Image (cartoon, rainbow, N blue to C red):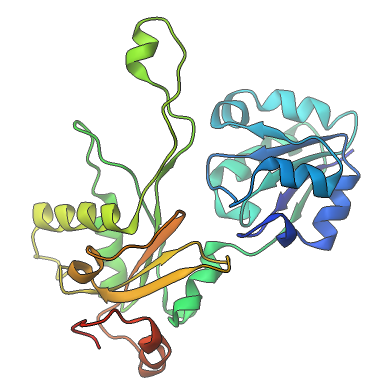
Length: 277
């Protein structure tokens, strides 16, 4: 029996590959990992296409109760569906390792992800450095690790793709303190919030590393891979004022030296009145 880890792509139920669809149809159980990213359609549309029930797998299920998923793979094929590509999140790597330790064959079926689709803006993918994640700041937790990685990339003349935080099943700790298990409404970080946090980090760190600032060229992107995708180019300060619409959003901090072919490809997306127009 096989554990299939199947990428769904970035848009709708139709973006699964034929190989992925055939694998799903062979499975006795199908799970949808629903916390590292989301599709723009509900699981009902997936079920209609697959002809099978799809179980939503929360972070808690995947990270703490994975034995439930893996035990099923000893009896029949099991699919774990992943938005984007399966190897773009460490969570899925951990599940692959645990499955192989139990002698369960693992088959990965790839698909499009933000890591490649970020090139839609015109920047060349081979000019990107390490990807960073930007988490929501809280009153007592304001990590600036993305600042150091962005500084490292920019020193090497590389662009930085920033993946923005999402909260799909966040516990309400006040309710938990009263003995009730309640979850807060989903939250999806916008380009605007990410820029606010990045500028806060820059102010806190100072400019001794020659890192980004309010005038640095950036690309804000939303709903990549969908028909209504949104791409806007401008300085950090300019993009703070832009409306990117519905989630999911991501952000690229450009290198200081942007290639002339990249600039030519990006012209179409520069915001009106930008210093880069």
